[in-house]
Length: 268
Image 1: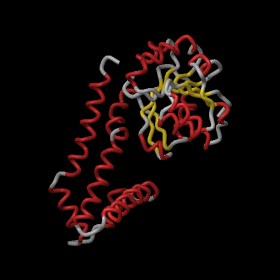
Image 2: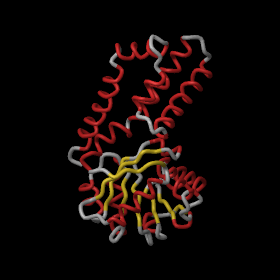
Image 3: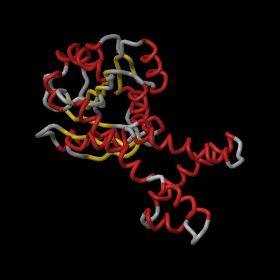
Image 4: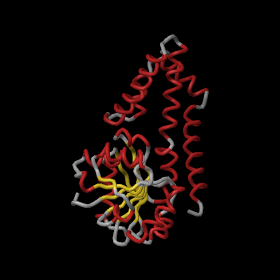
């Protein structure tokens, strides 16, 4: 990636995670800066990334090429109003949930906008981020976003119309997976394991299964079937999941979250 100057508007946990990933991927911390009205957030950003925290929005944006909007959506209008005089000519990448490209262009006064839906595993550098660019956005701008997001996991280009579905699946999905992990651990405790042991087994089982599915040349269905012996323990458990409509319920949760994302995004 060409040497750019990157500024984060907002220095919270997600901004810190992304900036940390950028540094680990080889981007010099001297080219990264942030601005946040919270002194504690700014201090944590500086400590964890080695990057600069500016004293004002103007200073933060002065020579920036790429601006990452990383504030909560309810604070975006105020932040963009303050930043607007200093944004012309810059690329803006927004991770503010639910704010459309059209809204961001209007509020910022610039056309080079990329909207991103990251997820919280980015905090562990294992995120899934999907991004959509404004009409006419250049391939070079999309490449910048791709490389930034890839520093904290996997990045995938989608259309803006797909971002609500992305929100329902990978955005809300970590909470659904955590609910499943807790359920597995509860079952282990009920069956005689200590809470610590049950949680360790549940976490490693989910982690290891996901890793195996990613790395294997076999389909997920084939890998699952390899675990299920006829009339065995796993077959018995799968039958219980099927009776409880587990797959349908999980799918419905994703659809419900996606529909809620569409509702929240109306008019933005």
